[in-house]
Length: 419
Image 1: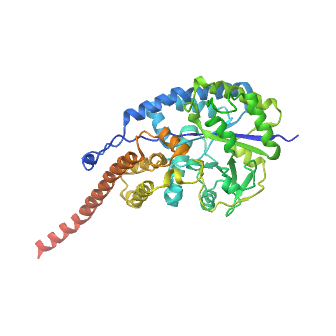
Image 2: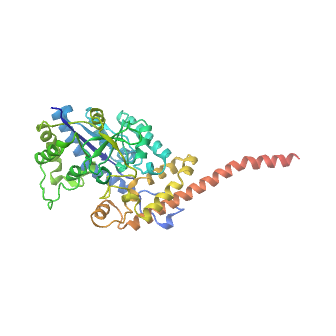
Image 3: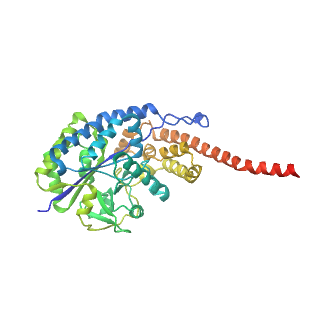
């Protein structure tokens, strides 16, 4: 019997957090970042999630060998902070990669939404991220996963033209209709790009519902979950479980039993004799696509709508986003490392996520992740920082014009003196 495929993927990202930057700081201070928050958050999540969960996965691999596979995408912003505050996390991920049971995926360096507005910036960030993965882990990513699983036909075509043959995205109900996420699909413009779709029901059972005592399926055991997988896979070929890595130990605390659950889950799944664990690249190689997937408008893995409204759903978000990308070409032309880095940090999708004004369940999730009391506070703080960055760009351009004009003035003066 040909076994079904189970594909596990985890996102690892930490934004570089902004300090409280007031209106009166504009033009006086270019110190935008909350170094204490960046240190404390990185260290806290390293100790609660990354290090203990990496140990769980190492133990699983030691027990099951290459019968167990998993994939990660790790943003450039996360690697920067691991290098500064938690180098033991990098060593821990290196150990996992060295087992041969882990695939490292490509993404945008800044965890940005550049794919929506600027193809050049998008490609630049992807190359920068891939170069970093080669430097840190010694691997060149072959599978792509965009920030927040954002995908459309046009974005997929761009990704295919960059040389990728596999991409991850959301199994959004409004796109799939009657179709199942449990098959491989292709990009409608460029069929060379295979698409792996997240099974969000089963993924969210772990990521969001695991420790919810009001959930009618609580407590969730490894055997129970393995039976759900077996049932789901009857009418499909592959089940893709995609989630934030911070699920383990951070969103679902250690005392919920999440680490024991994840240690026992592979054995429970393998015991059914119905699945094999494969990386995304292996999954795409094994399975033939069943159809092209038409996605005319961008989708994501966030909120009930599975669209872009988590980041670009109100006037605050759109104004901040538009003002940032208005200066993109000017920043690139300056070739100033400090200004470029600040521009890169401000591209992280998290900043726009904090400005979301949604209500009810989605609003509660946004509030949980935000360091600000209100979306308006997030907007004002971000715009104060961006205003100072724009002022610096303006000043640099003026200084450059002066430098260009100086030789001409000297030449004119010399000419006048010789007459």
